[in-house]
Length: 283
Image 1 (cartoon, helix red, strand yellow):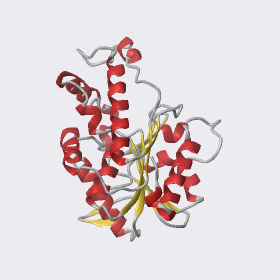
Image 2: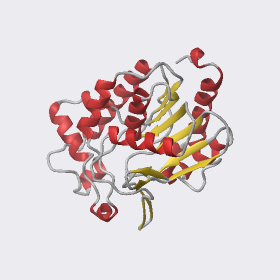
Image 3: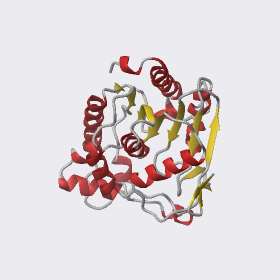
C-alpha cells in the first residue's frame, strides 16, 4: 500500500464487519506473528483467523520487522526507514496506512509489547478514531518509571541489545526515552472498552547469565525486579484506562501465540462492547 513520500507498507485484511480490528505487533515482529501459534499442538485458530470469524481484521508490517523460522529470516514487506524509531513514528505510519487503505473508523486496536505504546498514543492522537483497546503484555512507561536510575540504565542496555544477524534487514530499533515521554505528555485516551492481558511468568535472566551473555554489571536477579515493575505498571494502567485485566494468562510474553483462544475471546468481548454498549463496559 502506497502511503506517500516514496514509501509503501504491507497490509493484510480478512473477514467482514465493524469495527475493524487492527493488530499492532511488538518490536521486530512482522504481521505474521498474529497468524502464529506457539506449538503445533495448540488447539483452535491463531488470532488473525479467529478474529476474522466475527469482524474484519487487519495486520501490517512496520519497517524493519522480520519473521524468523529456524535460520531463515523474512524481511519486512514495508519500505525501510532510518532506525531507531519512536512510538510517534509508529502512530504517523499507522495513520497514513489506514488513510491510504480507506479503512473506516472507529477501529479497535490490539497491540503487543512495543506496539502498546503505538496503540495508546494513536488512541490519544485520534480520540474519535478508536473505539476499543486490547493490550497484550505491552510495554509501558510505567514500568520504566518504576525503576531506579541505575535500574533504568540496566533496562535500556538489556532492551537495546540488538542481534547483529538482523542488521542486513534494517532491523526495527526503539528510541525508548522520547517514546516514554510522549506517553507521559499524552495522558489517557477517551473512555472506551479496554482489556489488558499480562504474562504471569517472571523474566528469568539466569540462563543468560550462566551462558555469559548478560551485559557486564547487570545482576542475574534483575529479571525479578523488571517483572515486579511490569506488573505494577500493568495494574496502574488498568486503573487509568478502566480496563479489565487478566493477570493469570498461563503464558509468557507472547500471550497471543501461547493462548490464542484467550486472546480471541478478549478481543471479541471488546469488539462486542464497542458495537453495542461502550458506556456499560465495567472493569
